[in-house]
Image (cartoon, rainbow, N blue to C red; front, side):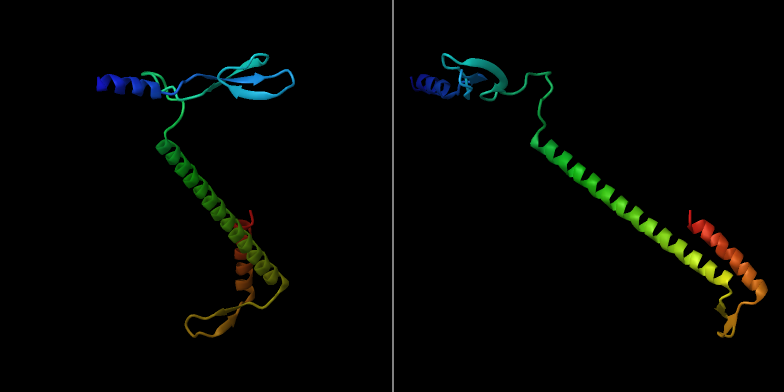
Length: 151
C-alpha cells in the first residue's frame, strides 16, 4: 500500500512539459504561456517549457557539456595569448630592424662625409685612425650593411 502511494505521489510531482507559445492580444500586448487565453493570437516559439530528458540514442547532442565548453574557452584563451605573443615578438623584431637600418645609414653617411673613424689596435690597445684604403673597404662594408638591414 505504501509503495502504491509513493508511486502515485512520485508521478504527481513531475512537471508538465510542453510548448511555450507567444500570445499577442488585439491591442498588441504580448505574453508567453503554454495555453493562450481566448481572443489572442498564438505563435509557436520553439521553446520548450521544461527539459525533454536525455537525447535519444543515436541523436547528436545539441549543446556541449560544461567541461567541453570550458576546454574550448581555455583553448581560445591560449590561442589568443599565443597570437598576442607572436604579434609582440614581430613588432620587437621590426623595431630592431628599423634601429639597425638607421644606425647603418648614419654610419655610412659619416664615412662618406669624411668623418674620422678610429679603431682600437688589439695588440697595443691604442686608437688607430683608418687610412684611405681601409676607409674604402669600410664604406663598402657599411653599404652592404645598409642593404642587408634596410629592406
